[in-house]
Length: 486
Image (cartoon, rainbow, N blue to C red; front, side):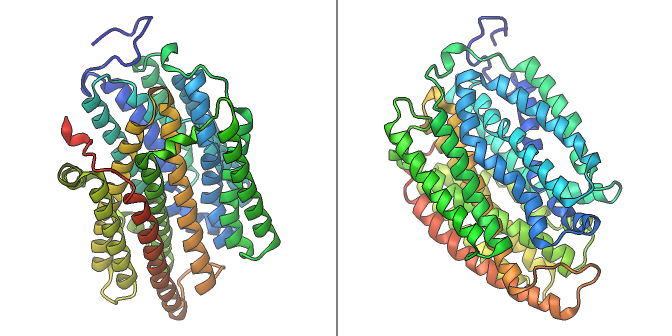
């Protein structure tokens, strides 16, 4: 292993074991950001009672984070590829930790929504950079792909562990501490990155100027698109605000595409999408993230509201997803090894659809938790296969000096899917069941109505995921590049 003294090479480690300090730090940074996506979902009923917030307001507690996070990913990735990935990540970690501490001053739902939006901005400086830095820590292609796979597993495990960790914590502390804990974790991650991640080598950065008009249009496009989905739930899909945001989003997307096609140095080279790997990975990630967000949102309400379980019980109910995420590595690796990316993703889509179908039947079957747990396990195996395969394929397909932008593109498509899945689930439940969440034990009539609405929601989600996932997966190649090649 070479030393970290200047001038430092771009990547300095030969094995994952040799890189344990930077890998641990980067994994912790990514884990904290991903956990924060779902950590508060388990606390939504408690937050709703404490801050007098209804269904749509609670969606904003989670949606505000996604709105700013997803809107800024491409821009931050482009900035990091020009001004230094480690520098941008450290700024994000500092902001994430300090903003999290401000939760102690929150006393209204509006305050919490603003704080979550600010956390989304800081998180946008973290998520794509952690994956990009891991990609650049190693020269060996096999070790590099293995490291990326580790990061993806850590991130997905964090996403699914959020409710369990949150539920456990809520048995002992107030919900505000779920955010306060971000501060020391961010500090530990920053120290590890300082010790183990070398400063960016200028030769590995993009020297072209930042496309400011393109960056502005991308933020506007993503922000308005995500707000349109949330506004549709809050105000109705024919409401003036919703329609205006939709028109604005379409206009901004059109403007962004025109700018990127005509700019001397575009922020996002649209020729990347000529590659079936990039195009297929992006589309498939939308499907997988929509499915995950919809299921997480629906099941939290199912366990805590309809069944009246405690936060800890509801968190433990998510264990099948955690087990599949962590233990599903041999399944996804063997699928890629024997069939390649395209077929592996098609199988993953099939598992998602089967899992959603199982949930649609299980939530109102009368057999209790076991069929739901089995469906969650199948669903999560499909999710694990899709997310890992697509992320590895996409990162390997982008140019060396645009790894942050490639990681940001992967994360952006996931955020689009997350917003789509949350909006779809929230809209259907609000339309079919109720927009107001009564406190205490639900009456049996409301529980029955919720189960009916939940069944229809998962059925619709299965159809949407099947169509989008199939269109994306069929664009992939038969490449078998994955972690099993090490």
